[in-house]
Each structure stands twice: as structure tokens, then as C-alpha cells.
Image 1 (cartoon, helix red, strand yellow):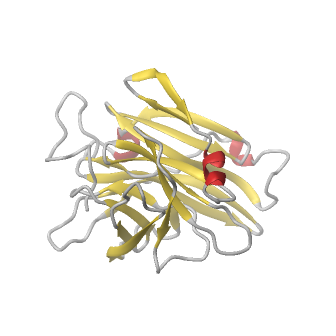
Image 2: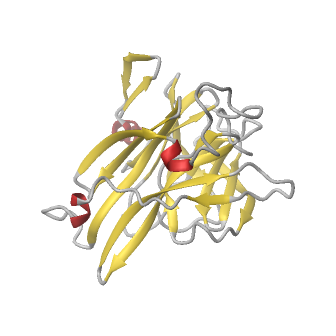
Length: 266
């Protein structure tokens, strides 16, 4: 995995996550995704699928390489893939566990000497708009709320396909609830890849555009994603095409609200 600063693209750090995992007794590193926390760059990954229970980890990458920390949550499923980590308004480590109901976790502080962090549920609110959707990208702070790209599954007989769907989670309301808005767009690499790839790496996979990375800067959304388990792509699109002018600020104006664009709701 390559980690770099937007302001200094020539300074690139290469981190072999599999090697780091092996040093700490983690046999498999799968689905790594970057997020920002406490002024640094972190990564989250899972330990894949091996027929039993797996684990979710987080690890600091910059400014210093930290140790992997296992994420402990009593209400989790046996096999987990993606939790959406973000920094809460008070600087605490938080994560979206699932979109329906919208379940938000808060972790104890990830101090450098810890090998695990434990989560408690801060809110779980039915919304009815993100049914059958799973977390894709890590969320990014936008206008006081959180923006991400989720995955929507479709199926025909034994085959399944996956689209991306833009999601916006509004700031807290007075009663502590959050409105979840799912955009109407179905996001795919192109029409041709929706016919599938040959040879198939997964005999049950019809097509898939799996979104894993998201950054929003100066009104532009940078998306990284996989196509049909066969290729990796990066694309940039105007952020307004995903979340609309009511959510994406004008790049020529300051972001609305204190802390907008830096941290998400606690």
C-alpha cells in the first residue's frame, strides 16, 4: 500500500500490510481502506474468510507506523467486512457499523501500546432508505455530516451483482437522530463490465464495482474501486454529481458550520 500527502505527491511511503500483519500474528490482511483520524492516516482491514470468525483491525500509518489494534464489539457478526471509521466531533474514534439501522460505534482511545480497542453503540436508528446496502468506502466529513459510497446488491438466480450508491448522513438532529439520504445513481465502471469478466474469479459473481476509497477536495470526489475482481481503477467526478449542490459546498466559499469538512458527527 502506498501512502502519500496531497500537498507533496513526491513523498511516498510504501507499507507492506501483509508483512506488518505477520509480525503481529495476523495470518491474513484483506480489504484495506484508509481513513483520517487525529491528524494522521490510518488503515482498517479484515482478516478475510476462512470458514469461521474473522476480525477487524485498525492501524496508524502516518505520521508514524503503529501496531495493529483488533476492534472488539460484542454485537458483531461472525464474519465482518467493512466498518466505516471516522473522527467524531469530540475527537473520539467512531465507526458506522451498518447503514440499516444506522448504527454508530464509539471506541475507547486507540493508544499506541494497545493491541485492541473496544466499542460501544452510541446510536442505532432505523431509516428505511439504506435497506440491503452495505458499507463501501470509508466515510468522509462533508458539511457537518458524512458522505460515503455504499454497495447495493442485485441478483438473478445464482448470480449476484454490485453497484455503488452515494450516501449522505446528515448532522445530528435535536433528538440525536441522523437522516440518511441515498442518491438515485447506480455507480458502475461502465456498461461493458456489467456483462461480467472472463474468466470468472468467482463463479457466482455476475458483475461488481466495489468502492473502497473516497476523498473529496475542492468540489472533486476521487474514487478508487475494483471491477469484477479483475482490475483496480481510480476516477474523479464532480462531488455534486454524487451528493448534490445542497450537500457539496462551493469550492470558492468556506465550508458551512464549525468543523465542517474536518470531523463527522460524534
